[in-house]
Image (cartoon, rainbow, N blue to C red; front, top):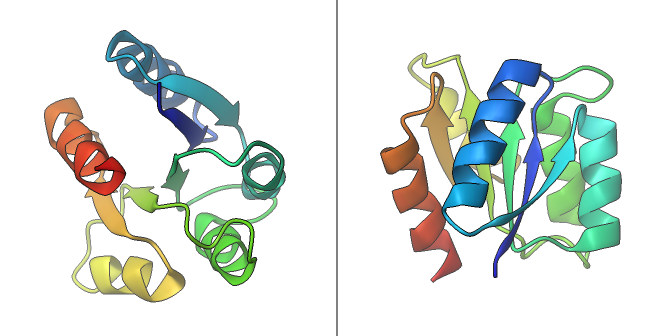
Length: 120
């Protein structure tokens, strides 16, 4: 069973995504801000991270950069989740170290495809 760390500060998004992913057979760990996301990624070494970019304490951009600089977490794939679907946001996410990018509201079938690609 693959383990996914979901870093999301919005309770509704966190609940909806975690329930849908659990139904698909993934084990989900939750973090509500970027600082907690970095700590849990280091401690638990998930197979993949879904990272909201607009987070309190430490935003998703900075959290991703920190994780990609650490030897023990740099190989964990990270998918950026953001409501900012502006031109250039995909490139900004890739430059921060994300392996892929998806927009909110999340279309679960599209996100699952990206997750499956990165885990295979």
